[in-house]
Length: 278
Figure 1 (tube, rainbow, N blue to C red):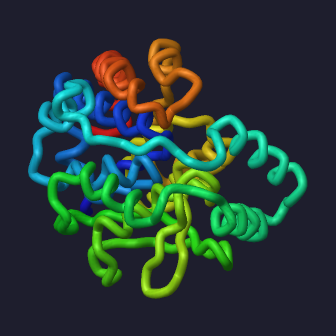
Figure 2 (figure 1 turned 45 degrees about the horizontal axis):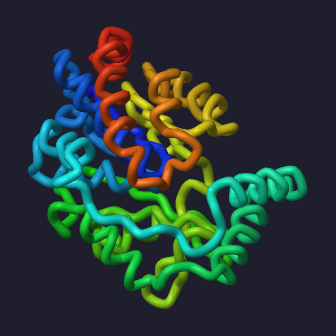
């Protein structure tokens, strides 16, 4: 009987990209090369950017250097619209007011469609700059986005007929901060408005590792569901990583400290991960 493994990479802005890359590099240094042995990767928002890089042909040390070395870091844009703090306050208010998850996603989509942000083209150029190659990796990969008008979940993979840059941009389109992404006439926003990690999409695999950079009210239930049939390990930022993230996970300055914190945490947590992964 074949044993399968899934890696789940959640959202968390630039801090999340750097931290997840560091954690994976730290695990690999200790002999747990999750990136090489995962049969499927589920990526949401920041996690989508990391997920596609794992199949780019670059090694984990090379990917880590792209986060820690200022000379190799991608140029990023400053948001022109809602701040992260304002968005989180609004999000909490809507969650309290709207119990239906699809309607909540639709309302956040409305926010995104009406927000003043940088242009879609400018944001797409930033996403393209994060990727070392624009082609879909061969390994099974699922990127999560949400239809801004209907609130429906959309899953992108290499068979979906959507270009990789557009799929990543859609998954990373934080409502109110970045513009929705237009794909075949439909506007898409960040898959993190479904849940920050979408760990339930790893169902059916025997071993699952979840890297969850942000607090996610839905994560415990998703992990409990997975544990009915799988061995599951979850890594969330430790105290040092949380301090490295700072108050704004979209600030490019957080990348170097967040990546180093992730690297140290990955090394420390390798033994615990091995129990669920190997």
